[in-house]
Length: 142
Image 1: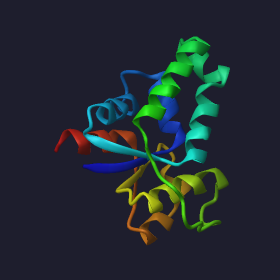
Image 2: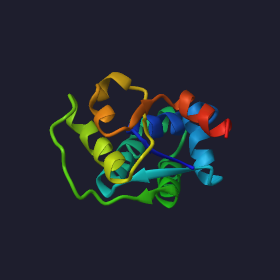
Image 3: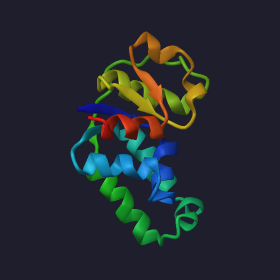
């Protein structure tokens, strides 16, 4: 079973586009076809973005529906404790916690729309950086 860490942009895309690849990945987590890894700080970032009115209104949701969505995410993640910090390794400091979860959680891949933000660092840890469309194809082809 694949072990993926979702960048926050993937969670927001799943919220805004229920028929897209990002939402399909959450469905695969719900169906136990893949494992979604997150740390407490990463989950808090998901929560902050999902409960921002900019995102839930764009998704056609109410605040209560956004809360239900993020609570569903909380129920799906496998918590990862970060024991080692390798900062700074990436251009964007917010992406550092995603990398830390991937390394500590022994992830197969980081799933993101921003491939170039992760540069070549994950190769050091043998972690791929892939788009949601690639990730869902892999899950479906198993």
